[in-house]
Each structure stands twice: as structure tokens, then as C-alpha cells.
Length: 65
Image (cartoon, rainbow, N blue to C red; front, top):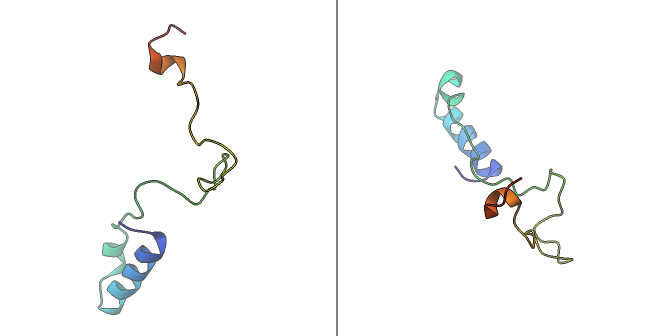
């Protein structure tokens, strides 16, 4: 849990105290939203417009489609 930086630091500290690599490999992190904008949309900090659609997709409104 936490950021990539936190996870990397946690792994480093665990290695220092002797946790074996096969145990470290079981850890999965980070979890949650990836806010690094490696996707196709604008960054969330982009002030040029809304981050959500103005109208939800039809499948969410109950309309046939």
C-alpha cells in the first residue's frame, strides 16, 4: 500500500533486515488509482475542463443500446 516510492523504500528496508526475495515477491503494491497520467486522458490537475463526462454512457442510464 502507498505510493511506488513508499513501496520501494519498504522493500529496501525489508531486504536490509534479511527478508528473503521469495517472500518480498509476494508483496503487491501500489494499489489503487494510478495518478501518473500514463493513460490517454489529461492529467487530473489540468484546469482546461471537467474530468468527468457531462452525460453518463447509455449503459449507466438504463437506455437501450
